[in-house]
Image (cartoon, rainbow, N blue to C red):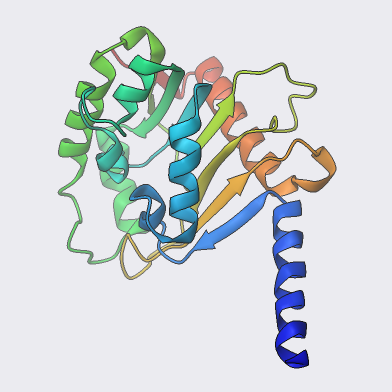
Length: 226
């Protein structure tokens, strides 16, 4: 019994250290987060449903990664539905077709989904962004991406541009070169608690994503699509 208690205490300390960095947890398969399955996927679903006033950032290679979120406005858990029913704005970054073709072999080696998801993904993205188009900023990227990400940043006053405001949540899938399959990557689920001293990991990705979008537009390697 004592040994079991020590194990539980050690696990609790580990969880506290992780949450102090902004890392709420890790899913072995990042796709479990997109499908709202797994322990942290279910947590993400709760935060997704509760979000009401925020900017949602998507950094993608192929929009099809979020195919289950790119449904019609009538579908309850689609992005289009959230945009129509709440004060959600979307910033979506994707690779242009030429860069997609050149980068894909570095990201996936001999995977069955190679080269077949880009066009369907773009079709879903175009359809989703048609409704309430003034709330969507869709950007074509001409530079490599080093991770796939979804980040919800609440529309609240910010004390610092270097720190994610409390209530920020989302996940990141780091791009490892040449994995055995596109799905064989972990997803890092992140939440910001508002304590800038104890959320360094979520701050890193928050700053990276926000600056990437801002600087990319300023320097012309992110261009808005119609």
